[in-house]
Image (tube, rainbow, N blue to C red; front, side):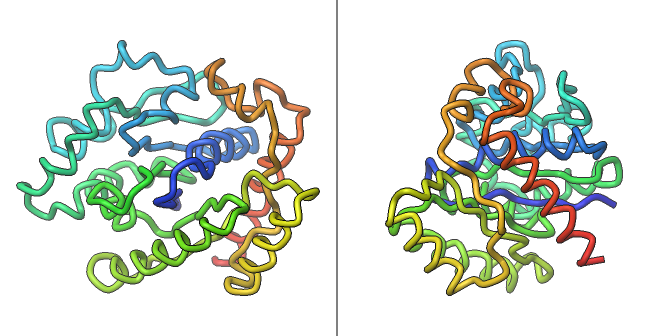
Length: 257
């Protein structure tokens, strides 16, 4: 049975979608079978894999509201080992519609369980909020990967997310845990970066990945070409960082077994 990992931080612009796309691609290149669930109404992960939204007939929206099965919404990509459950702007209304459904916090979990055995890893790209969509993602996952930008305001968001995880653990998902905190947009030449990194490691210790993701132009460019950076610019610093992150994640998961 595969591991389900929610990539979450309610603060926007910290690298959630970038991490989902490129970590999935890196693991796929290592021979793993990966499913990425785009659970953000912005649909950036869908676009980053080169999926044309106008051609999509079934999405994660239909799956969580029960008008199709998860397996019917899966789209194969041209990238080794990676498939995607896409999202479009219609997902924005799901939070309100879910309020009227039974087991509204567990809709994504029920659908994810139906395909969990088919993949080594399932990544859920969460929206930048702590709404019902994120609660669904946290309820569905085994663990949470938290990207955090190297700036002080990100520390506040990390505390809030940690509290949300505790609430979900108490009410819906007793086994949820943080599998790792990922420092993104890392620029070693800035004192602020080192200060924030030191503070995060001080409070969260070994939960912080040794790998950090640097500021890198190719990481920003790759989505506009519909490719993970490991395909767009495989020798750049960003690609190498996500290869290292994939190796570190596999090592951590092996220790957990």
